[in-house]
Image (cartoon, rainbow, N blue to C red):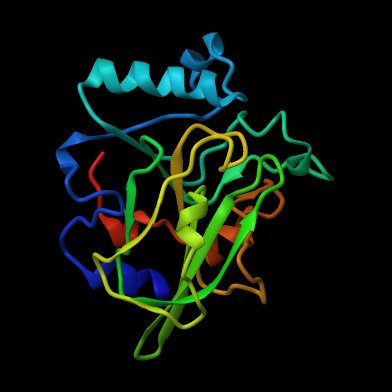
Length: 224
């Protein structure tokens, strides 16, 4: 079972951002609709979101804000792509909020499955998907909101080892209207997708997506 493999693969925390940043400089971030502290910020704009994140980082004396798995968020409300049919606002990955240009490292050995610049507003922007095989287990990891340079020189099947530099974070004009961050998601069944996979779901879809996209922190083991 994938969840069991992720739990057992490593006993130590794994960084997906620049390893020069100590994991002790990470702090959890709450962007859920239940967090009333967000009321004073325009969270649907990259500037408003970054302002809140900076407030948290300064208050806690940290450098990287992270979290968000299965968080129900209001930051998608201004993007029409999330409101077709039942509202999609439940986040299926973990986010790591830090400056544009920050390196992204591979947390587990894999090969390039696909990549694409998903450039419509509110989407991922430049995106890379890796495929992972371990004995009878196979799964995928998705890295979204990257820089355009991250896609240069990639090809399907390119091998990356744990700790290799995969990419860098994109600025809001490239990551299509978000404060700079990495969206990191684990996917069991990619369902035929290439360079893209839903990172947000509706309440109606939650049962399927929660099973197909297990908590990335089962692998990363970052402490809140």
